[in-house]
Amino acid sequence: MFKGGRRTTDSKGEYINRLRSLLVSGFFLFSFIFFFDLVLLNLELQLRSFMNPLLVLLFLSLTSAAPANVIIRTVVVTAPVQVVTVSANGAGPVPISTASVTTTTSASAKPTTSSSTSTTSSSLSSATSSSSVASSSSSAPASAASSVLSSQSQTGNSFYNTVFKLWQRFWISNKGKWNDDDEICGDGEYSMPVLWNMAVLGKAIANTGDKSGVDVTLERIMDYHDPETGAFFATPNNGEEIYSDDNAQLAWVFIQGYKLTGNKDYLQSAKDIMSYIKTQWGPNGGVIWKKDKNYIASISTIEAALTAVRLYEVDNSDSSLLDFAYDCVNFMFDHLQDPSDHLFYDGTDKNDLSQIDKGKLTYTVGCALSTLAHLHNFKNDKDMLNKALQLAQAATDTEGAFYTDNGLWNNNLEYVHLLFVGFADAFQLSDEFGKFKDEVVRQGNYIYEYLQDPNDQSLYFNSISKSTASTYQRYSKSFAGSFTQDNSIFCSNDPSKPAKKSLLVNASAAQILHAMANF
Image (cartoon, rainbow, N blue to C red; front, side):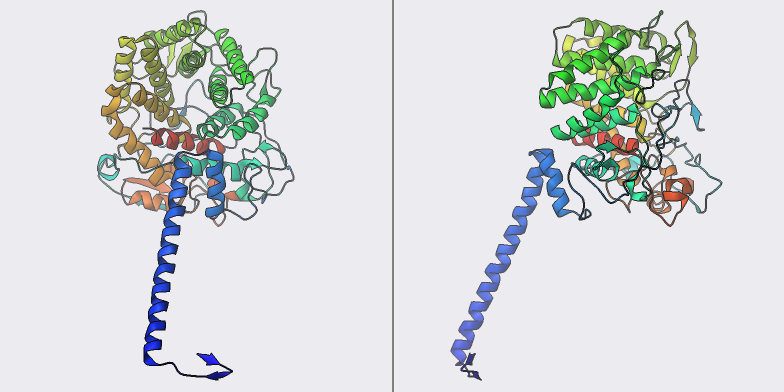
């Protein structure tokens, strides 16, 4: 020790006592730090599981590697604020038929937006580009999914993280608008999302229980409102573009918004949409896909039915909602079901029901599962239950139309998310669907483990063919296929720059992850 500026010596006993004291103090300090760390970890788990999701997002923003200038709700301000261009054409994703392994659009195909789509073929080589610069291939046993992927969910509550990233990357804080362009490119461009994208996004946000996020998003969606019909345009002030399926999905957001907030205006908006959809009933049945057109789409018909049962769930004063849902379901099974595999065709002509587009998509089956499960729950209707079980079997048939040779569902995320939601509804409403859970969980784990960008955590690619070389390299260790890098996924088509993400795809991914968390 020091005394009077000079060093003195302690006795041996004093030295040992001081050393012992230091060791004991160090032990207690270490124990305190360890205990405090456990408390913080437990706090995070409690926040994720039980507390207001907005607090979860705040907690994540403080504990993750988010940019310092990120603010919750007003979100990222790193992108230039100048609006360079506005692209407002299009009306949702382009449905892609899975009847073949090439990219074929169904009759209900819509113009693409900046979130353009492509299907993953069974060879995983359908998406090639003249600007491709990297190519690789791999080999693995066919139908590898069952041996590679766990039947226990690996996703946890990761949907919160994906929704948080959506706020970071696609919300323009100083404008109070959603942008279809990923701000990571830093080019200041603005593309207005079409209604379909906004509806999928709104549902993903509502799933987090974030009331203020729902309010903000629905306020922006009101820009698309058509006061004459009560429905919503595909893009603001475009009277030629009103789609029944877009509006049905939007009604689900209003319904969930009403359940979260008690705002009766939201309930009324859902009812107005339902009233409009009923006016689109075709002369021979089915719901017309696009206003003033002839096509009866299976997706518009079954989403209309699902809207009716979800509306009835929050307001059972109108029994005609169930009657309408039954009419839609009966039309689907009578006119649009393929008897060979029990899946649904894409659609038909309102004036000639024999003119059938035989493309098949997962989201139609998903919405049917949700609808049938609810009808069984409301009416104890065994026929609806049996039909749903038949569809669940068809959708999980690894030799069926929805599967690649690797044993993976072959639809892009923007379609397949509704199949996950359909199974989530079925699992909750009847134990008889439990036998399908392992397979559905494996498909969800595939998305979480293989379509998540390893260099951009919590954000996802639409398919493995529309990913990066590093993402495919991870995939190729387990699955067969070939890959050619498409530079269009990068900012400015430059592979040295970040891979830009899609608002629609990642809102769909968030819905898948939410469904997985509730299996």
